[in-house]
Structures are given as C-alpha cells and as structure tokens.
Length: 137
Image 1 (cartoon, rainbow, N blue to C red):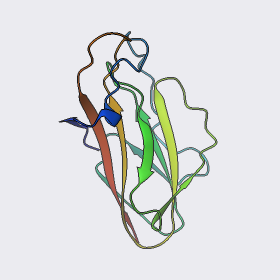
Image 2 (spheres, one colour):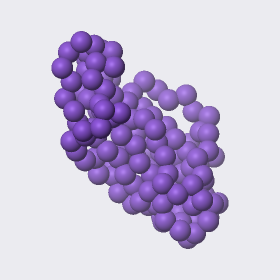
Image 3 (cartoon, rainbow, N blue to C red):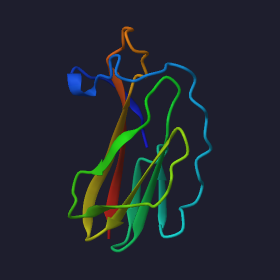
C-alpha cells in the first residue's frame, strides 16, 4: 500500500472542525495473519495482491497520528470484489473491511483519512489515500 498525501479541494473530504479531539492517537498493533474465515490479509503496506475466485480478503488499516480513522473502504468493481461483513469489533484506531473475490478480473480497494482537527480551529485541507490493486484469477 502506498499512502499518498494529496491536496483535496472538495469540501466533502475536508473535515474542517467536524472531528472532535486533536490529541494523540493510540498506536494499535495490527494483526499479521488474516482472521479466521479470511484467506488474505491486506494492510496499508500493500500495493497489490493476487487472490483466487472464492477467496476472502481482510483489510486492516491503522489510524495515523494527526489523521482521522480510515473510512469508507470500498472496491471500485463490485462484480469482482464483493464487500462482506467481517464480524470483527475493530480496536480503537483501526478500520476493518472484508471482501470476497467473485470472478476473475481486477479491482482496486480504496479508503481515505483526513486531517484530525479540533472543533473551531483551522483545518488543513489534505487527505491520505489508501489504494491496493487486487488481481483475481
């Protein structure tokens, strides 16, 4: 995964004053193997992954200091990767998502996090973007 800091001009992605608390974010330890029921673990360190039809992908993203939690984890082609519930209660500072490979093809899983700002304070307009390319065979 490559986290990219990009300027975002769209107000929808700007969390200016909308997120409470600007304190330090705890540093949770992400898992190193997929949870039972999943075949592949994807973290923000992954840029690409290959799976077979029928396999299930668990996505675990860890909140970075000064940023909001990762949100809206989705696949750009739901005919290739279908979102599935993980049944996991995510620890504070982590975001979990699950996908199942439905057919051969390629899809990209994405998410974003914005600057963590205190209410009423100026908020920088930038976001971190997560993207991993999934090839299903």
